[in-house]
Length: 171
Image 1 (cartoon, rainbow, N blue to C red):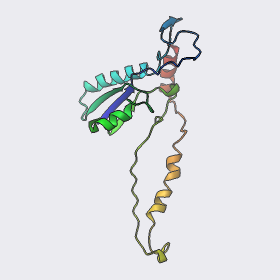
Image 2: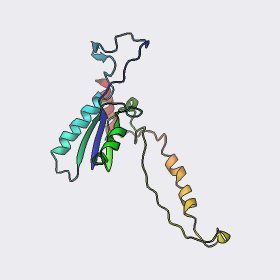
Image 3: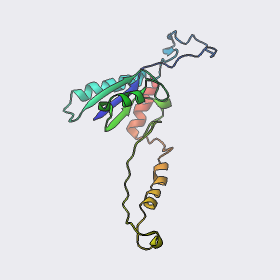
Image 4: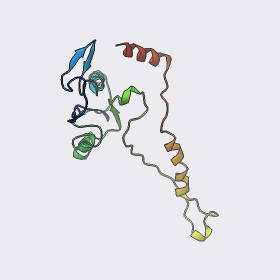
């Protein structure tokens, strides 16, 4: 089950924020759109919907779901967490989130991940600890640095990815 997820909202402009252009004007100037929410998730949503349409035309042998939430990624009352708590059918084996995250290519997204790890040990009386048994907890502890090392993994650009990225950035 593949879930394509993105948020549809625009975070409110706070009173007192300094705007050189009114936040909801949608002013088009020199080929750019200015205003609150002019960029956030618009490209991501378009890409997700395009993927949904293309995958739907193939012989994809699984379930495909698009979810568009009406609140921010995290912290919002009506976001992805609300959907997950509302309906188990929206839980996917994989989720593709279209959030651009500052235009940085990443292998993950700033969110949570659920991992089930299993380690097998061999029970032994405490007086024989370290001699007879195998401590499953200590085996698992060795995995933590590996998981933590995933933080801050730099983006890797292939020749093709770099060319495509440069073309997209030109507009």
